[in-house]
Amino acid sequence: MNKGLLAVQRGRSTLAGLFLLTMAVVMMELCLTRSLSVVSWQDFVYLMISLALLGFGAAGSFLTVSRRFSGSAQEQTSQLGYFAWLFSLSAALAIVLVSKIRFYPEDIVGMHDYSNGISLLILYFILGVPFFFAGVCIGRLVAMAGDQVNLYYFVDLAGAGVGDFGERGFHPSTSTDVRISSRGTSADQ
Image (tube, rainbow, N blue to C red; front, side, top):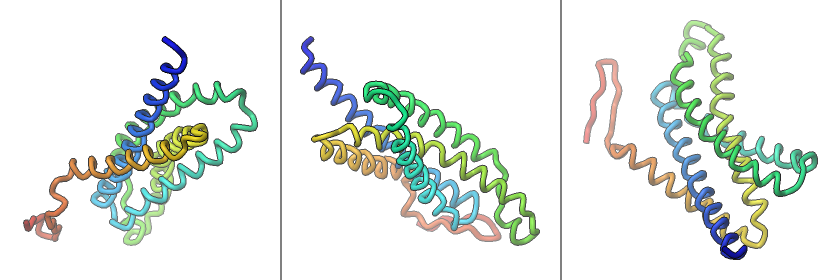
């Protein structure tokens, strides 16, 4: 197999990986947004947006510092698979751990139980780690794209768009008006 064909195949698999990664990131963000809006106050929905931005910003800082202290570009490229694997592992663990952490914002206001502040910090950390790993992968891939940055950016946006539509497929009843009252739940279609 000649080197040109191998480079084209490696480029396609890299683009496919970028597409799947951005799709997974957006799907995770939207699913966690919906989960947090049900489990705790709906005001904490904005938590996911800020955590995603925080994770990607921390990844950008990490990439800036790591270039100064790391070896060759080949070594940095080989680490992308590890960071993608760490994203998938930390995302799965985050989803499991979030359901195990007791966080009731009503207790802070009503009963002056400020231990929920510690729970909130733990939630911030657990939910921010997957976005950090995804940000390292996406940032490094875009930085390595060179002249093909427009193609990589297009694949990044396409993956995010498909992730949005894919997440909506898991929640087909988004047009249903669901009301929660003191008597229970009622759905008006």
